[in-house]
Length: 247
Image 1 (spheres, one colour):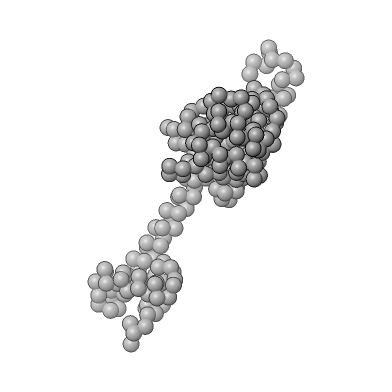
Image 2 (cartoon, rainbow, N blue to C red; image 1 turned 180 degrees about the vertical axis):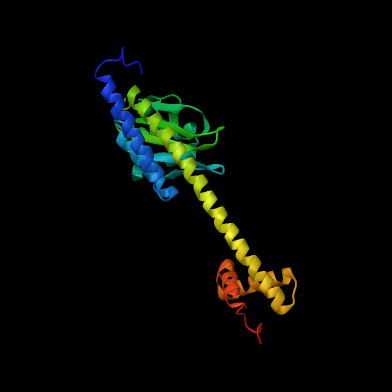
């Protein structure tokens, strides 16, 4: 911003907003699970965008859509109409690289059937939907805001909502990558434990690696315990507790 030409009141306001968004980004990044992050993103949208009475996220799951972290039953009901018709701001925001705003859903010709049903059945008149994505059209979903008032969302509301959506997409992508890395690490550790157990069984019972794995698998089914738990036990005690095996 050119502070020399900006109105005096605009500079403190911009600084306050910048600090608010920086704090929001830190809070989102420190949440422990993806579910917690979704809920915090929705709440951030509600707290930041004037006019929002309800909020939620639409995610594309295979060929269908799913509502995540809705703030009320109203969100679920309105979303269900869109998903059934495959038409509406939330659906279009997931599929297209645009922000969708409706000042009066009942009269909005982009979604004639959905708009009339949302307004007449559930009283929703205005909506804002922001696509959540980060890199190379790697779509995560759409952040959606709802209001029972006509013309509820101003141009400023759109701008603030886009900033929230951008921060949300970055944090959510980071959360997923972190979870993937943790799962990979756990998988590698389990594989190492299983490998050690197979070596012990092969040596103890003079069997092949496939035969050792079959023993471990059968013992897992028989005891209703996870494979890596049994493998860890074999590595610790040097034998597999399975009926008739150690007679």
